[in-house]
Image (cartoon, rainbow, N blue to C red; front, side, top):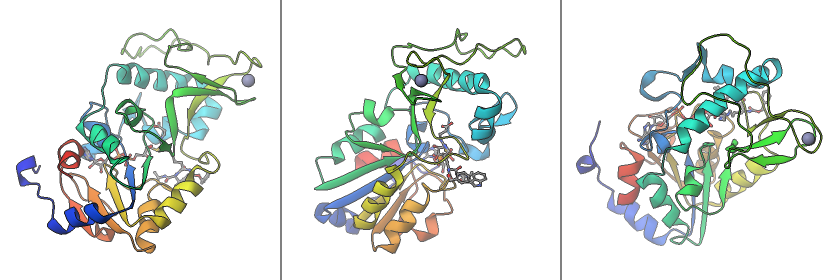
Length: 261
Ligand code: BV8
Ligand code: ZN
């Protein structure tokens, strides 16, 4: 794994950053890795929950068939997240809002760490783990105050197949709440991807940070930016299917590279 000492920022990139006006950054789970948030596919493995790959437990199908199991999985992740902090990568990007005339931060993450790190106007393609919404009337609820969490045992996963607590109930209409997160097989919130696409078409510099670039439609944003003539820079300790499309690949950790930029 390259260390910070190995990472050099090219002069041409420094010059581009000096003159850039429209910049878009797309982040994935990798930017939260140094905060201690497990990635989904990092290090060649896939996040597994009770024997299920995460794109099975985090899917529209699982929501239909076993909403309490989906709540258990998200309660577990919120418990982990509650103790974690944004890292130098999040903090560096928060400063980019004031460096460029038109800066757009698009994230695939649902962990809220960009906001906690001081970023304003975060475009969340896949929602936010700290919000829930009613399956019926779409009333939204903040979970920060732990308003609605099951009686979940701290961090432990009870392997017993005892009955899971039911999903929390909407105060407005009495139907079940669900995580306000886009699951596999679900459409993104209306308008969110369209706005991100517009920004990708307008940007002159596009950074792709900490994503395996496998999940669509998010992974198509850098392709759209490249098609519109933007200079694409990938920041990732590993190569990805996107690397060949990029003008520059900086092999390193977000928390080490972004502050250098
Ligand atoms: C959609 C929220 C239209 C949930 C997420 C079959 C049936 C149905 C759909 C599909 C199908 N086949 C394909 C699809 C489309 C599917 C898809 O793309 N599947 C993939 C797996 C092939 N997409 C969808 O379903 C999307 N909706 O298409 O709607 C539709 C509707 C109905 C039917 C058909 C089509 C919705 C996708 C959204 C899913 N929700 N998150 C939750 O959190 O539980 S996705 C979730 O996974 C993340 O949000 C993220 O987007 C993705 C994980 O990707 P990464 O962020 O890249 O993370 P990963 O762990 O993979 O990689 C980490 C990277 O970081 C690595 O490269 C690593 O090297 C690097 N790294 C590690 N450490 C560091 C680092 N980098 C920097 N610094 C470090 N320190
Ligand atoms: Zn309701």
